[in-house]
Length: 338
Image (tube, rainbow, N blue to C red; front, side, top):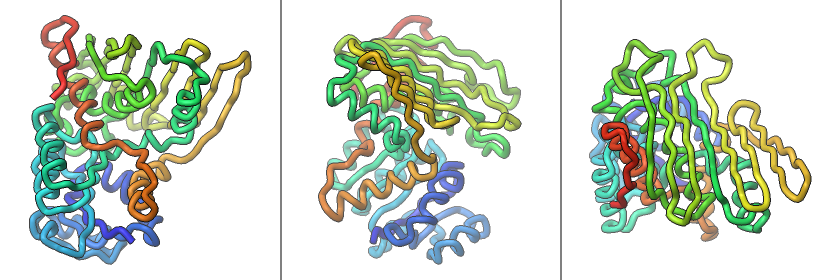
């Protein structure tokens, strides 16, 4: 049984994604402690799990009965929360982006190595059935070398009820680029086995009156072994839309192609060997639960982990902030490794 503490309920993903998964996992993961600035706000989830309330992060981290922590604080606090958790010897599940600068992401990686703690970037897309099947088919050579990937990640900026900090680029880390690049960037790296080399971007603030950051963005670039990529990472969905957003990917290989529509109708179509192979995979909530199950299976039987680690999280924000540099300069830039 993994005993989990939650550090902050500030991020909408804590209440909207992780907790809905964790409440069905009480036989494998038990939430024993929650820190949030407001005990009144935390009451619903304290009651749900029978968890102990802590008035400070460090008090929770000092609890020796807590094995691991889920960090769902505001984006600008992720780095310090992760480093403190690593120093306390806790396994870490951190929401994306793991930091609001590549430099802070690198500090997290250093702390995880120094204190020898497991770190999981909470990228649920890795656990989508269509993604897992595509990854297996790539490894088995069905597509040949991957030549190009085009991806979308559209969302509604956590509306309705968007937290104030999300509207502040200094606390959120930017706008739609940092918010929606990282999930698909991780899968592009995972599918190709390559690193991001260059990036160019076009972006604008056009859809939302209550923010100053970009809400439409499209980037293109090259990978380290020749593949090319495109990512459309926009806050283009509205609260009244029937679906909060989407994640789609079109994979082009030497021998075949695949189109994945992960979150609308969960459709996957594979074109290979002269045939169309349709697949209809699973639920979003299950994928968030699989992030935690992945680690539990590793602890129990040593099964190699599927999920993203701290370096994976760092590589995605390196791309996002290289995109911001390209946006400022109006030119293609090299994605620098930290």
